Amino acid sequence: MRQALFSIVIALAACSSQPAPAWQSAAHTQLANYSESYLAGEEKLAGIHFDKALEHISKTGDPALVGRAWLTRCALETAALIDVPCEQAKEYGGDPSNDSYRAMLEGTAVKPDALPEQYRDLMASLAKRSVKEVNDALAGIEEPVSRLIGVGVTLKRGTFDTATLELAVQTASENGWKTPLTAYLLKLKALYVATGQSDRSAGIEERLKILAADKK
Image 1 (cartoon, rainbow, N blue to C red):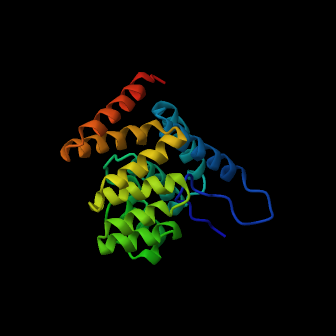
Image 2: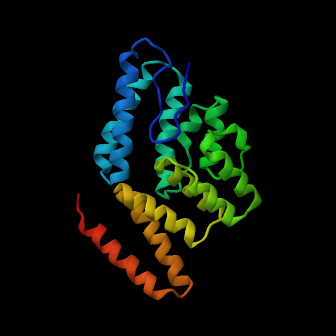
């Protein structure tokens, strides 16, 4: 049975008692390494892992699986507040699950039941435009990467406040994910400045200095 993979990596292994084919194991490992390297701010290494994962997945000739690899990349960029269209994933469109997930990442309204379960409450809350319900839904997403992806989608929809960004900062900080942490700190600092919270803005600046000093 094919598994959807829209959290930390694409779960490419089949639900079977038989050993997974070599390409599945290799692709899964490379996508996991890509995800962790990207979030940690190691962009060059992340690119190497992604290219290797794509090479293994492409051996199947399956456009849905190739599309999911590109969706993984687009999802992580969304989690890091990089607002780019999922053009490569769109080239391999046609799979209903993939297309619905891509639409969500691009900030389009999507029926909740067309998405992975962890995003359904969030999308229902976004449809109501209730910031409190949105924040509650985000806090209820247990998997950290999925939560950050949800925050990225939320910001694209414009239904957020300081608590939304603070949750993202906490999530990224706890996991040592430099790339999204920097993005959310900058966003939060701008919001603090706009609302006259100069003391909190100064605290954010200190955190950004620490991150900037890390040349890894």
